[in-house]
Amino acid sequence: MDGDDVQGALGVLESLRKSASNKNSVTFAIVNGATSTQQAFKMGANFVLQKPISMVNINRCRRAAINFMIRERRRYFRHPVELPATIAFSEGDKLKARVTNISEGGMAIFFRGHLPKGGVSTVNFQLTGVATLLEPKVQIAWMDDSGRAGLRCIDMPRESHEQLNLRLAGQQGEQPQKTEKPRR
Image 1 (cartoon, rainbow, N blue to C red):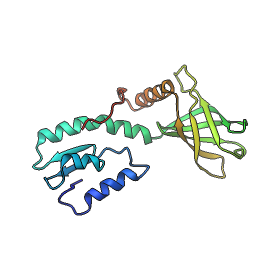
Image 2 (image 1 turned 135 degrees about the horizontal axis):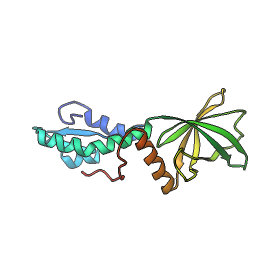
Image 3 (image 1 turned 135 degrees about the vertical axis):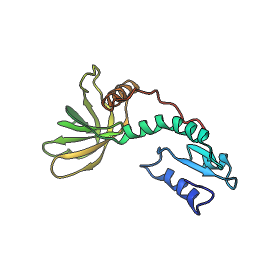
Image 4 (image 1 turned 180 degrees about the vertical axis):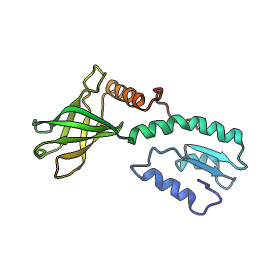
């Protein structure tokens, strides 16, 4: 995003960070001196390029950004699966379901019958080739009348999260990466 030469661009960057879907997106700001590098970071940029832009700086930022982009793709990309699951509800009821796709941030399920009143508490399932049972705390993101629903993971034990990341990275043919904070 060209922050200094395109009117309103920095406002777009700030509002982008307020959006649930884009709060973790990788963003680049291009500045020419009217906005400082530090101001661009405060507005939500992950990377800042100063004009005039050199290929050396572009390549340095690109290499640093790749791992963040891969992680963001894993967060949203839906991997098709067919896994049995048990959904536990706040009031103690349980329901058998099938996980039909999964991402780092949630999953789609198929179930027969109706979801009991009250919120979903946890869902437990086992990924193929993973010894540990995963049991993230979830909430219903969406539901339809045909027995399909989307569950958003709101809390997952660290070990389960690592197992899921390894599995998702393996399905995309990636080398699993350790999660780091963006360098500025």
